[in-house]
Image (cartoon, rainbow, N blue to C red):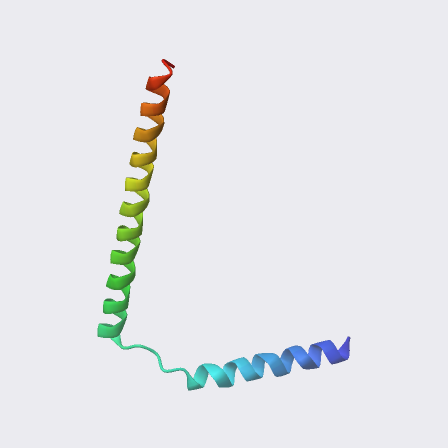
Length: 68
């Protein structure tokens, strides 16, 4: 039990040391990255929506052929 507490303390200390080495983005980099993520999400959403519409159309055509 004591060993687990000691290992946890060492882990937290190593995490703190690593966080000191991180190069954090400045405000323009952060805005640019955020914009890229938002645009990418919108593009993926559009592709998924188009695929949904195409599959819905295809299913409607198939169902129409069988009179359902």
